[in-house]
Length: 311
Image (tube, rainbow, N blue to C red; front, side, top):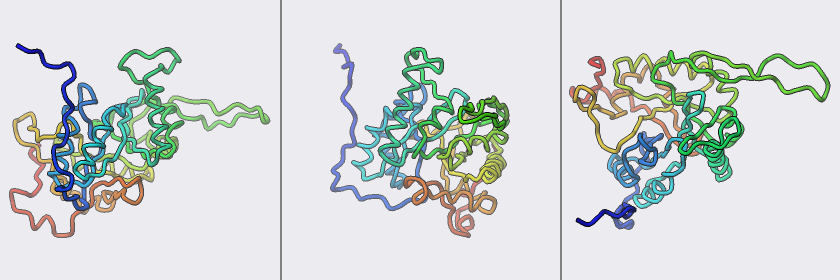
């Protein structure tokens, strides 16, 4: 029996570009996608992700592999083949346990983001050679190379989870021109306690990601995230934790509905303004969810209306 090649031919979108109509501007596009280049996490290649995005009517697609730019070339090429706009970025996971979607706004910022990832993969925080496959990026490293990079904080599933970050001391050192820089102090707390420090430390931080987890308390959780965002001068950005291009069933075998127009109807009155995070003008032409017109819920059929109380 013949052996399979060690390097299979690369999959590509097989379509005549002249036959493809560019999608109309959509009210929601997926940001934070992970591809198969996020090993042990993402399961779909660029072709499957882009084809699904086109079928759903998206006009853009945002790639964000974990501490890596490995998937951006294929996403860019396949998205262009279907006349989608690729939003190039990555997902930064820091040693403090925090996660950010990072999207550079220009070539210089793209270079700084790549340099940040390279630094985390080449050396440890102690200056030693890094182990293969490990990437250590601290908040201080992200802040130092974050100019021109738009950051979206991905909150933990458990909002009571505690983190420890380093913040500058507010004690002013006495002395002349040779006075030392402010000392760094460790601060431990939940996200609501640390968010003001994060917003001050990371100038590119503008949004908190809001995602349905389908665990029964999504409305309350997103409302809590909205309050946290407003208190820190940020806004919400609707996202989806996409690991695979196809539909998935939950643990009970029931199909999970990720139609965000329906899922976010319940929050229309509560966080109507916060979810208007249209980044087309504000942040490198990124986009979040835009609320549907008034009365949209009444136009849905009974089986289409959102119902999350059973989870």
